Amino acid sequence: MPDITRNPFSRRHLLTGAGRTLSLAAVSLIVGSKMKTASAADVSQDVKILNAAISLEHEGIAAYQIAATSGLLQPAVVEIGVAFQGHHKGHRDLLVKAVETLGGKPSAEKSLDEYAKDLNAASLKNQTDVLRLALGLERGAANAYLGLIPSLGPDFHQVAAQMAGDEAFHAAILANALGEPIPKDALIFG
Image (cartoon, rainbow, N blue to C red; front, side, top):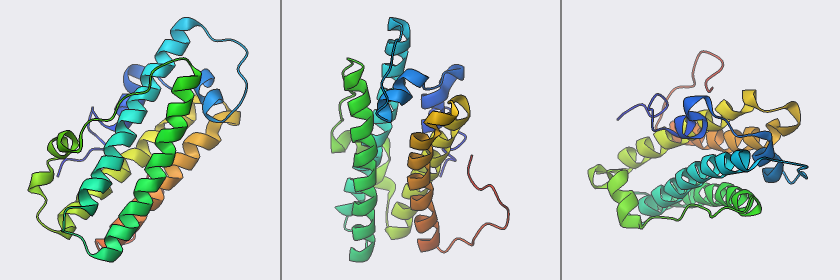
């Protein structure tokens, strides 16, 4: 399985690619703050970055849907996956609201068949395969959101940290389910 935390097409790269980061204008909208001014270029860039994040949340939502209906998971595992899917829906909804507030059009979802192909779901043969895929996606998501924090002013760290926390929580639960040992070193993410 590829290490998506180092993949140039990972969430981190799409969100911060080429040195770009979420501007304070977009983050202000995400956390509900009022924005005084923003240039058209800033707004356009924010919409592009937010839409990349929306697309990746769509992928996470679809991955959990595909897993839940695969017949490969025990019922208790499906229940946990559906809860995680709900968290991703909350992230997506927050990001969609920000794009709409900026006057942009949120990224559309693809079909489940398209996501299944993108995720190589046909290669998943058992619960362990599904959990490993989900773990890779969640680790990549945690690192992506953590990658936003250093570029933001202190007043805007909270939303990126909250999303990173959700993703890290998901990764911890999945790693435990796979029987991975607790890491010996600190600073697991970021």
